Length: 182
Image 1: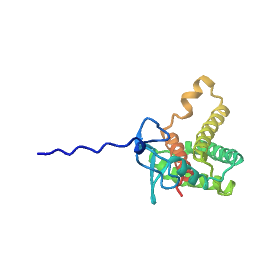
Image 2 (image 1 turned 90 degrees about the vertical axis):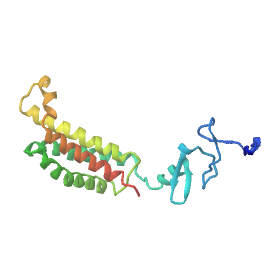
Image 3 (image 1 turned 60 degrees about the vertical axis):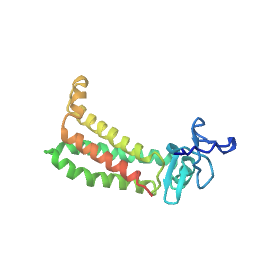
Image 4 (image 1 turned 180 degrees about the vertical axis):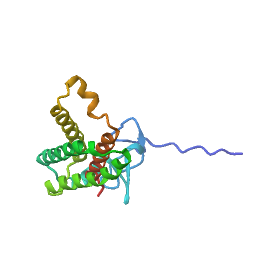
């Protein structure tokens, strides 16, 4: 019985990933021809591409500027603050889901319109942070007007489960809307 031995590979046929030079590979990007290992490859509808080519392609869709980040944060913080105060009026946490989804849609639509529908690569994260910090500030203002001492304030800020759910749902919806895939 004969065994099949692998053919020796010539030294010039061995290629290495450009990002991970210790990994041998024969996979190439179908756009730029760069050698890449399997973890570096991104499957696209037209074949495998390297992460650099995919990132260049995605950058065409992100037209947001630094001013747009500021606008997104400000709009989401103000509307999140209003939402944090209004969330106290929701009696049951099940209503928080029902109310949080359309409110998140309104907050994200207002923020998108304020920037002329431009998105930046990090607009989703900034928008979600604006909602959470705005809700925190809204609750802080609400409690400070009631005369609550600061050391007793921190446990009260997000003590109500419905407030946590509404703020979380709004932040998730806003983040998702800005991270919508093209």
